[in-house]
Image 1 (tube, rainbow, N blue to C red):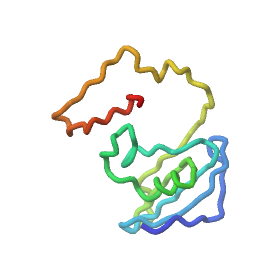
Image 2: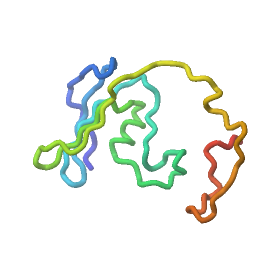
Image 3: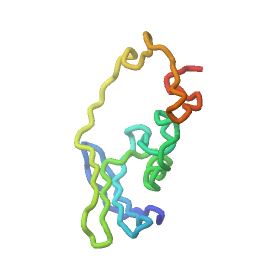
Image 4: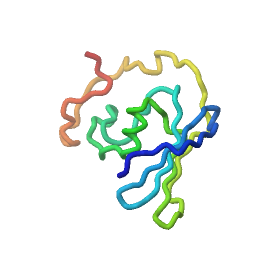
Length: 129
C-alpha cells in the first residue's frame, strides 16, 4: 500500500474541515481519505481495537494513518482499478454532547469467560485494574 499523499483539497464535512489524502491499495485500488482534526481519536473496528481483544484482522493502512495523525476519517472512498466506486463511508452528522457515566457502568454484571470461544486470553475490556 502506498503512503497517503495530501492532495491540497479541503472540504467541509458535517461541519468539520477535512483534508483529502490519496493512496493506492495493494490491489491497485485508489483510496480517498478525508480526515479532520478535533474529533478525538479514531477507534478502528479492525485489528488492535481493545474491544475486539486485538484478535481481528490487521487494520488497513489508512486506519493507522488516521490514528497516528490524530485525525478522524470523515469520508473514505475506494475506487477499483477501473475507476468505479466500490466502497464509501461518510460521516453525515456530528452531535457534541456529554454522556453520563452511568452509560459506562458495569454495575450488576458478573465477569465470566468462554473457554471454547477463542480462549478469551483473560481479556476483559470492562475490567479496571
